[in-house]
Image (cartoon, rainbow, N blue to C red):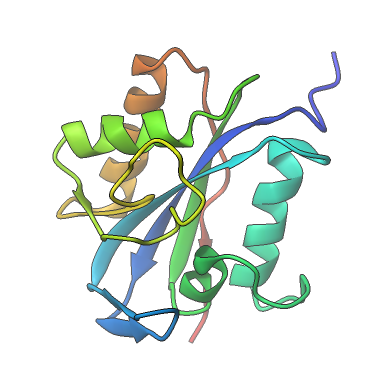
Length: 158
């Protein structure tokens, strides 16, 4: 069965090498360490296409002008791992909520400007390392009824 083009939800586990201020809207202070961004892809191309776009931006490739908050954050991240799952409905809010319930702290107002569920953020930070966080995201996805898969981890050289 071909899964390409299917809608779904994803989480990007990001390594942030140092504190940063992103000048988007009122601005965001991004702490050094590990962050998780929750997103969904319900339109054309599906979740694989959306994740591939984010990974191209992370790697310094072109994907058009920055469109989402996460596009700016990807330019400062030192590593990224995507955890994805197919879903017929948008599950990014449920995932963000599940991660917050597991002790991750929201970065208020990041990536949720179009959120209708009242999320404080779709970006969460954690004290855990990146590999442990990837496993935590997998467990959180399974906990909300999803069947996740993990992409390869990408690093920036330099």
